[in-house]
Length: 264
Ligand SMILES: C[S@@+](CC[C@H](N)C(=O)[O-])C[C@H]1O[C@@H](n2cnc3c(N)ncnc32)[C@H](O)[C@@H]1O
Image (cartoon, helix red, strand yellow):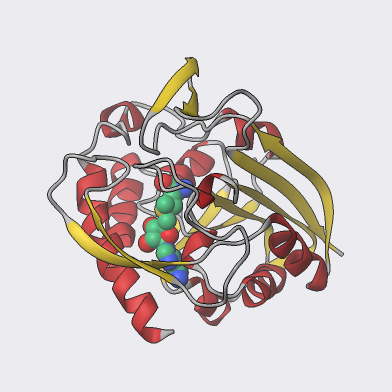
């Protein structure tokens, strides 16, 4: 696994530099106070004021810091040193009190000495993880009793497509071995010249949910959405403001799922 994580870390360190400067991440608006969270997760998040939140795979921290602006005590974790350095810089610039840790998700408990009210994870996270049983065990381990996981993720069905040629190319189910690809550009800037190898895994909905159940989390809510709040796949169009649809798909195609689960 080491090879896969190291390769992906190099990818994310490079992507982060492009993302920080991209229109996609709207840094100026964010710095002026724009909340980077989307309506999907905002609807599912309980009142976070004074609650402790562990944000796994926090990238360069916009969502973590948006939660901090809402009054939460946030700890963000990410494998990318470049992401974590930028997140810390933004935290200081904005005078917030979020903490950021550079670590592999799977090693997170080694870095923490407290349990959290909420674990938050969003969009484009679990495809980088080979083993969801171990992932669910980390979440369970980090939550207080009755603590809550809020997960908003791209739907496994949309990950089955090759977004350039629209062909069904990837397995709905986790094959146990990663896909290896070399990607030019990034979803946040398709014109960027960066080109890096990546390893990713696909995960079915039942794999996600069963892993959480096996680790003592009760599923309270599961939702599926026929749009993405991000214009992040090739050939998307904006059906209504802020709701993007993959170009070849008709209505009712699953783009995102979200769930809320509580630790018993
Ligand atoms: C698509 S981004 C998450 C996007 C996030 N919702 C946002 O704020 O834009 C995926 C993140 O996962 C991180 N990542 C990938 N594999 C990881 C791992 N094994 N452990 C921790 N972080 C990881 C990457 O560094 C990257 O920041």
